[in-house]
Amino acid sequence: MSNEFNKEERVAFEQLLEGFDDAQVMARNVRVYNTDQQAMERSGDVIWRPMPYVARSFDGLDQTANFFDKTQLSVPATIGFVKSSPWKMTARELRDALQEGRLGDAAKLKLASDINIAVLNVATLQGSLFVKIVTAAAGFADVALCEAIMNEQGVAMGDRYLGLSTRDYNGMAANLAGRGTVQGKVLTAYEQASIGRIASFEAFKLDYTNRKTVAAGGAGLTITTLAAGGNVYVPAATRVGTTGERGNLDNRFQRVLVSSTVAVVAGDAFTIATVEAAHHITKQGTGQLKTFRVISVDDATHMTITPALITGQGGTEAELQYQNCIVGTPAANSAIVFLNTATGPMNAFWHKDSIEILPGRLAFPTDAGMAVMRGTTDQGIELCMTKQADIKTGEILYRLDTLFGAVNLNPEMNGIVMFSQP
Image 1 (cartoon, one colour):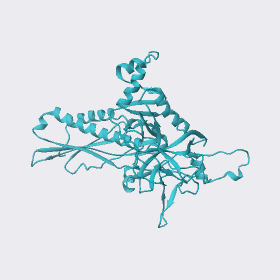
Image 2 (cartoon, helix red, strand yellow):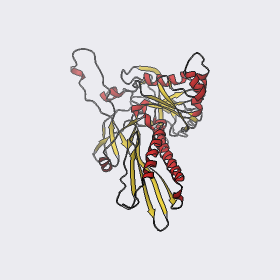
Image 3 (cartoon, one colour):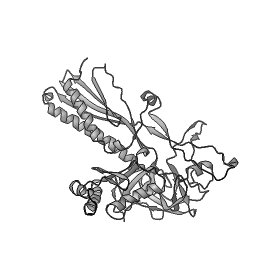
Image 4 (tube, helix red, strand yellow):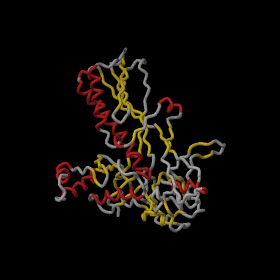
């Protein structure tokens, strides 16, 4: 076969895969869902993933009046990222095997970074849980607030992760290093700036994080929380289009009417006056205002937010089943208060099952004049390395490719913590 890989290249590719695994900081701490690649191609690389049911219970032996239909919610997951790192070398340059290895390492690190960034983006830009800290990162008390907001809303215990920017992480390590009464961890924090597991989270230091600018929306921005105001959301499994066809409905997001969207941008976090977060199972109020994120600004008075305002005011079974907040005092002009009051890094925290990676497969032909080599990382992500020589120029073209998707299955099980927010 023309352009077949030699043994040295095969060994180098195996080492490249090992290094790729090592570089997966965020991707290794989310769930991986494998799909049938032929079926995905035929469905436009979209598959609908079911969300967990939330059940209700009633008192008494006679349940005659309590048999209701259940609404199953689902989320569209898309294999939509195609990342490639190509390079070329001449026959003379290939005499330096070390140089070839360095180029492969650079390609590997860039693709690993691309996957990490995709996971980081769905967590920091769509996660609805928002923890605002007015001071710089200081330690346990900060992370404990992330634990509290998850516990209060019924997010499952265990498998919780926290990714902090380097400065915020080191700020926590500095606090820990000064605690002489805590043995073991103090020395690790002092010598390696490592905090490890803290307040039920596995904490990781990130060398890059997304930054969020200060919210510029007007202080007088309001939204109606009246039952008849048009913003009360009713979950549904499907919706019927204008032509009568029925399709699945994504219930993670809701388009709401507000007084104005001037200066509001995607990613802004906010609360609504008297709208209290509810525990997803018990439906009891938490005593804390529900936090929301802006997904998009649609026009002068409409924006898409997450999560949806499922207040239960309509009294339907679907609303009561998936209720996530309680309106204390419904009003036509409930005040919106933005939480990101200073520009800074968005530190993500998440439950492992709330974010998913969908590995894909690129079908490069092996009989079309190029050599093809495949490998799968520990996370199930396939890398495809191809090589082709040009007899006219003496150049050899290489490329390293990966196909994958990243989806936020439940934005109410992940979010961000921001420090130094006055």
